[in-house]
Length: 319
Image (cartoon, rainbow, N blue to C red; front, side, top):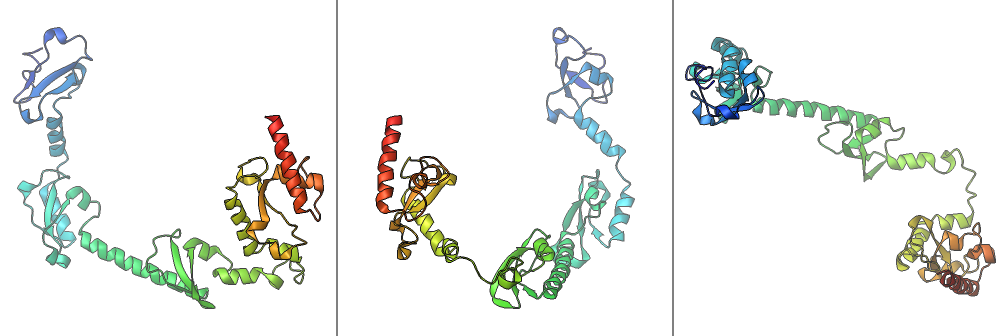
């Protein structure tokens, strides 16, 4: 094998390095050096691969490059048809991956540019011409979107839009002092583009459930921003922990008024008048809870502290 197939492969042949005793079967990888491409170093291949015509990978690449290499006249014609000035000579061109030098008549100030024939033949060209086309396309698009916003009574502030998922800033002609934000998609699909106009269209007499403003005073207070801040303030002060049993599950926590909500209106949003309890220690629907024991009306501060003492004592006994 040493002096046969390997010794006569191609012009310079292959120099087989594997020793006879190391060869066991057609799948044994044989090490060799290609005399035409010694710079590649030691390569390996199976005997089955050699019989199929496979060999030095660099020889194979050169063979394929020669096989699929275009006539240089076709390359010259392609550049001329697109008004580019080809600088590279035929001796510089090897295959479709060879980078060719050229000048773009529209951007001579940018100097010599390079591109592979494969990319050029795929409609790519001067990158500066590409930048200008993209900029022009974006200018056309942004004017289109400005018209869309204008038709809905809004003024678009964002200068570039890539797609309908982009968030854009705009103002409503009815509320010019408020800068709003929305995705292009939601702006197009929304019945009311302006968030403020949308709330106005759904509130009070414009809402299907409006009954003339008969919401109880208690509900208004509990839904107010001040009341929500009070609740969060009590939770933070108590470390978001039930002060009765130590429960820390956030979804199970609630805030209880130490002095009754109905009897002390001035203390309804006083953080010092709140305590964190879990629903099992607070809600009437759970047996043994505070409201389950004392009811839900006119509860006193004394009842609360009495309950806390008994509840903690029960929990200690359970341990």
